[in-house]
Length: 218
Image 1 (cartoon, rainbow, N blue to C red):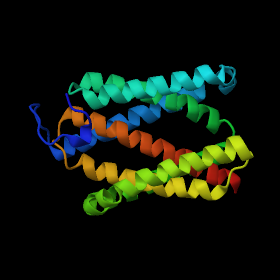
Image 2: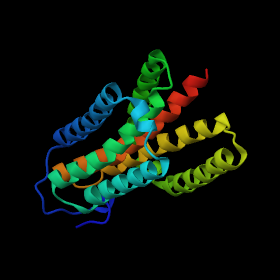
Image 3: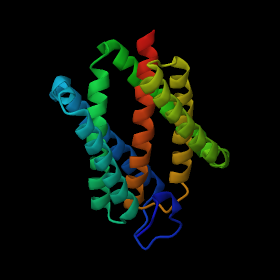
């Protein structure tokens, strides 16, 4: 049992080829995005909005943290995949609520931009893994500060500065490069591929939501 997938340096599980490893990461990501898409087209956002906010927030965080616990602590692919879905579903509810506020053309543009940025950051993460490792601490501190500032702005002052969305985009661009670089430095097993996809999924969804908000303002 490992505390964190990216801390794994050895494994007793069978290793797979780099091509198959990357394919499994890609397929796992596509599964998560497909589930989110199905939720968007099949669940009325109004039905989500009627849920008590307190209950919704508690359920959201409980599901996400339980899912992260499963895929971080397990070395069994099926358990990690189940944990991944415990993260995908609550994220899908958030995506549904937010996407419903925007025109379909803006959503499509946000998806396209997110895809291009993700590919670019993955390439940079492969080329400069040491650089992204050096900035990891700064990314974490920056994200924490931004979260605190944004909460204060929204709940105390009732405002939101657009520059925060740009800062969050930069932070999650860094996280995509960082997590992709780390994903290629641990043993290439099926379980590790699923776990890395789960981490990347959260980076990409957060990036998408911020890009959507930026494009929506235009």
